[in-house]
Length: 235
Image 1 (tube, helix red, strand yellow):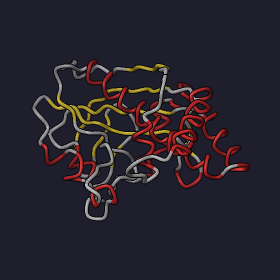
Image 2 (cartoon, one colour):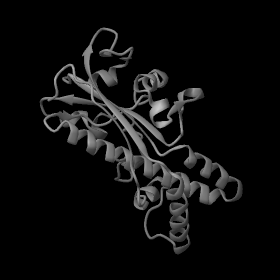
Image 3 (tube, helix red, strand yellow):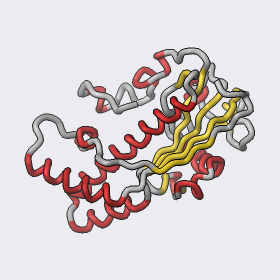
Image 4 (tube, helix red, strand yellow):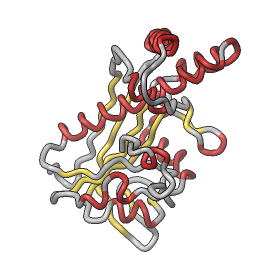
């Protein structure tokens, strides 16, 4: 594990040569055999998206400590409040904060497409959601390669459970995400560009209990549409 005083920073642009179309179809709620017309539309929208997206991520590792207020991110102004994030980071001495985006041009393309073809815009939006998840998975991989001796919790984002989404602005400020990858927050604490993610993963020197990963600890488990059809959301 890295020394307690270490803060690791990384920023990188990555290239997606293709988008996970199966994942996009899942976001569309499509099951079974895919009609040829939909296949063609997906391929067309994928090509258009790949021409404009600029996937990027940044992450930093911080020491953390639990207090009555919540989980303090040391050497920053951040305190993560809420029982869910506190339980999520239980037993962790560090946390990695990450931001990821596919860029503002994806939003622009989807909005323009909505004007002329709402079906294509829906497909494109689903593909963009799949693309940002690919970026997050790539970020997960890089983070784990950076800290090979640590064990990780899964990603936990502001807005999950009782982890307040109102922390987004301060989160981005601490990460300097506005300057480094063009990520901002708008009204309602919605990330801009829209196809972006902020998240926290805990680092532990001992294995992370399975009960703190995925569906088992998700507050949406009982009403999740993915689970109802025997699927999962990817987390």
